Structures are given as structure tokens and as C-alpha cells.
Length: 285
Image (cartoon, rainbow, N blue to C red; front, side, top):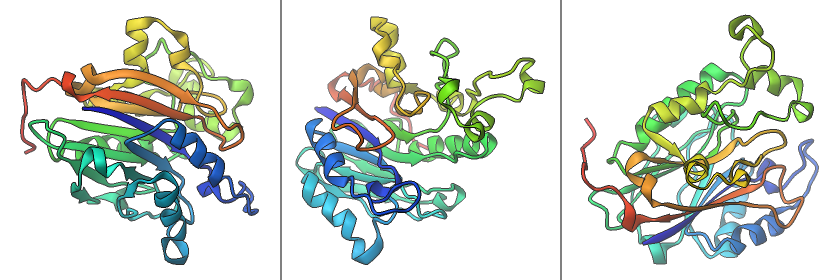
């Protein structure tokens, strides 16, 4: 089975500007997402999507012709959302929002029977942008919960922090606001130098057994376009798979059009599940 996964930060739900003015960018975002022909859509900043009887969530279901998981619990209200193509993935077999309250924006683990020895688990996440230590704890929690149903897991979203590998391109500090510099770089007194990227959040995903799809393909093809910035100043939006799914990573690209849809580019990753490593299907304990 081949799956296309799209990650997209909507930017204040795609419904408002950063200062709260009405700004309906959803039609442009829907065009961007539809063009990728996704089977899984992992959205972040779905602010306001539960209001007025989940009106915007219902609009997205209709416009994308996809099904949606329930909106997970969120302390901030800036929730991540997960949509899926039922014709490809079937009905979901689990929707686990346990410990969602331990994160700022919330999350849930969706499971699908896709013919692997254990379910495919999928998480749309948005990590704490303010404090690196909190985001690092969230990354560990989400990685652990993604494994709750077995070793075939996928985590994607707005991670808010630099990529894990130290050879990744440096951020564009000229475009970075002071509060993001304070969140995304090591303290000079700790690092011994100013403006050292703090990679510990995504490094935690790697240490937990997850693989950065863009970096995985970059190692194979040495195509620097795979490492392009997704936000205003760094590659902070990503898809990570558990190691048994790493052989499935077949393609990666950014979604740019229409311009102005969001302050984040979208990310599209193609997976060929026939390549999954099924040699060690362990149980969670």
C-alpha cells in the first residue's frame, strides 16, 4: 500500500490573521492540500475548528473529501487535527488521547489496520514553542504513546525546533524573532558560543527510534532541496517514522502553492508500506 502524508500548520486555523482579524485562508489551504492527493492530513493550529458545532472541521471534511478523527483535548485550544482517506485506510481501530493534557496543544494516536503485523499509529503534533525543556518532554511523551499499539508509528507536525542532525543547514537568524532565538538556540553560557541551534527536541525523537523522512532521503540522494526551510527561518515542520517504517519513505516535497496560504509551507511524504521491516513486531509493555 502506498500512502501520501501531508503536514500543514494552518496559521490561526486558516481563519484569522495573527492579530485576530478575519482572514479566511482555508480555500487556498484546501487547494494546497488537495493538490497533493493525500491519504493522511496532519494539521496544526486548528484554532476555532470546534466552534459553532465543529463548523470548520465539517467544512474541511467536505472540501477535502476525507474523514476526521475527533478533535483531541487541548489546554491551549490551538489543536492539532488528523484527517484520513477511509477508502485507503479503512475505519480507524483506535483513537487514544491519553496524556494529551500533559502537552500544551494536545494530541491523539490514531490506529489503522493497513495489513502490517500490528496497527499503523499516526500522531499529528504541535510542540510547545516557548520552552525547549517542555517541548523535549512532549516529544518523549508523544513518541512513547505512538508506540502504544506496536512498532509501526508515524509522527508529523510543527515541531518548532531545529532538525536533529548537526549537519543540517543553519537557521536563518536574520529572519528569526528574539523570542524564537531564545527558544531554539542554546544559552551561550551552556554552548560556549552564541547562536548554537538547540537540537535536543528533535534529537529526542531520534533517540526514541524515529527517523526524519527528509533527512533519510537526503542521505540517499544528497539533494539539498530536501532540507529547505518550512517556516520563516528553519525546517521546523516534519514527518518522522519509526525505524521499521523508514524503508517505506519513498518521496518528500514541500507544498508552496498557493502562496500566502500560511506562514508555513506544507510537507508531503510518500510511503510504500510494502517495504516495511516486519522482522521484529514487538508488543508494548
